[in-house]
Length: 224
Ligand SMILES: N[C@@H](CCC(=O)N[C@@H](CS)C(=O)NCC(=O)O)C(=O)O
Image (tube, rainbow, N blue to C red; front, top):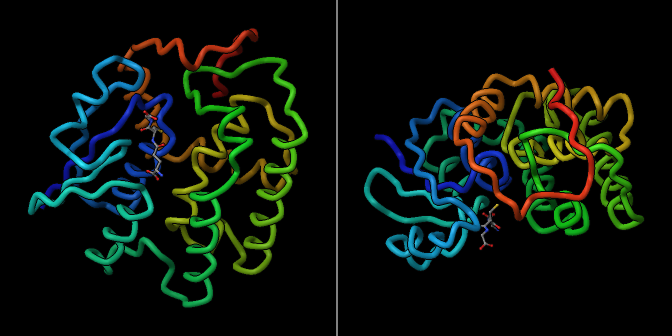
């Protein structure tokens, strides 16, 4: 009953991190297969998974190919209702779906100005107004969720909503983005989560420098 998940470089592929967390955080068995980004071999690696054109891509134990993180997450939730990927409370579940969907379809400025980089932090990054506006909206929806559902994660217990915001938490750290104390505590919870630590360690072990993600800024060590 093991799934296969085709992923990009673990230090950089935020959608792959989401795809993997949807398994790892809920005890679902998965085997990862790396298709390196910007390697010249990306299209070739994906060819057997057509019509998929981006990572992550999941293959069910029956061999069905499913692309796109939201579809992967919903499919896993449907196939494993006992695993609790979405909250059991209907109001929390609806909010978790909203939060995940808003992440999946939004925050373009943050995503393009601050690509995920789990190798180290960048010093002296100056967020522009669009990035700050995305960050403000993220603060707003996180705060509203904590107020409504009481934490410690967005909608109570850890759910797919948190899966979708894990890479956002890492961007806040990598680029030193300004957030409130409450949001900072949520970011810290992601960074110290054992599943995230495992993912990052495996990413460091990949030991591949992807120049596409370089920035003209000084580097600082990853916290912790
Ligand atoms: N909407 C997609 C986005 C997936 C995505 O953009 N993946 C990136 C890696 S993080 C990718 O495959 N990039 C390769 C490319 O653009 O050629 C999802 O939710 O999975």
